[in-house]
Image (tube, one colour):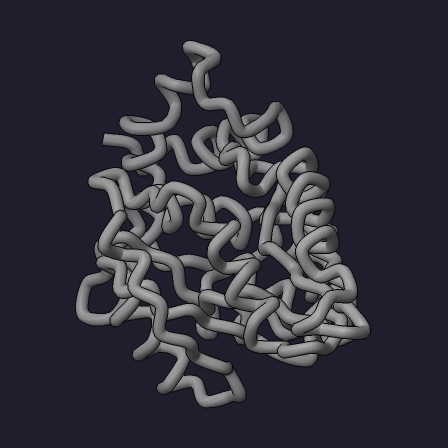
Length: 240
């Protein structure tokens, strides 16, 4: 069974690639507002990533959500593997809230795809499909620890993975949701940040995230909330 990882080069998919060791890393160029930066990063880092052009960005909402995105991506992974049986990994982690990274979604997707790939005139032997979210019970902090515990270099993980909504000269802004979550996860695994990075990230967290946590509306689970509180307390001297 061919192993395909839906890959973006972001923190989660970069770490899962090293841990899960897929046969194919599949990047679907959806032509979103972030695609160009993601592709530039992958090209500069080298490595074997299969790129497929599929302009789902035409349906990108202002909040960056593309409805049904992961269902489309899973179907792309099925098509690029032809008649081969395939296992497709979605980079879902414990804090993900969207329904198309849920256990129920995966169960329904597996039922639908295996129904459609039953033996029939155009695929006589049929095709087995398994979609997985095997890292759904892991936080971003857990993934980093797994990578390091298996001999990985935390500095490499930090520099090679990239997730940012508003990059500045190709670098993380440290004041958007992907950036602050990367900051929290790496800091709690011992990565050393600069004072400027700390100041920017912690003030963003205190202003934009802590109110939701205090109002019980953050919604990413108690473990992540406690990690965020730990960081704010640790770096309270940086707060404006």
